[in-house]
Length: 277
Ligand SMILES: [Zn+2]
Image (tube, rainbow, N blue to C red; front, side, top):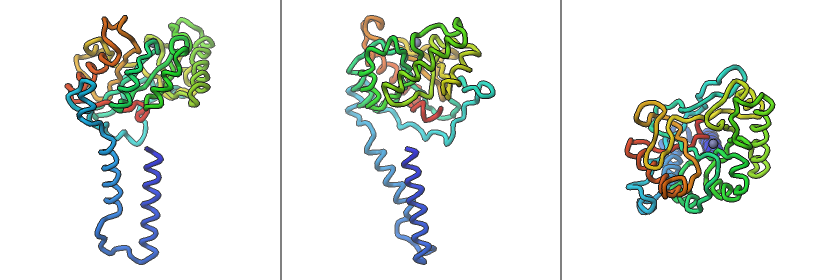
């Protein structure tokens, strides 16, 4: 997206130069080149929209609304000098929320199809000891647009460990995920959402740019809020890769459909967390 913007800016600059050098500046143009490029970009977006039939196949009344344009720069405030921000809600006024799935226990091939067909932005916080045996599955999710982020090697209660132990858990998973997926995560979620000053220092030392908590969590049928009774702009939603044994018979995709319906009913859509943090 950013590369596309740069390309567009470059094309426009080149176009402006060409017009100046041929003395055409100021002449009335039948189609403004900026407008033409804008229209083309809008058509492209329209082409990529999910069809009504696809949305209905996944149990939604309509496709998710397109995510709003993310802010030009990241707005979350650092937790202290040299420390990453700790974020449970992204600073925005747009009616957009973010979906995060943790651990990596359940590997449901239907979920890969769901993410692909609904073009669902999903951030996956993976724990090596849980997700590791199934990294191929998470690679498939990544190939259809989901992103891989850090949730430690072994899922410990981090405040119970000294700095070195915390650093080992976080940096170790950075390396594992880089080796497996070719990219070092930028985001980190501490197990159970529990952290202390050493966690933030270790996260910074491991190259983490934001520590991600949550404002709402996905239940089998509904959302549970840490505060209030409805979604607010920028809320980060926590879910887990769980299967029917833990979801009273419901599948991961059924749970996700129910939550997407709740999100839509409140007038929200889903954005990509990495565009904001
Ligand atoms: Zn977890």
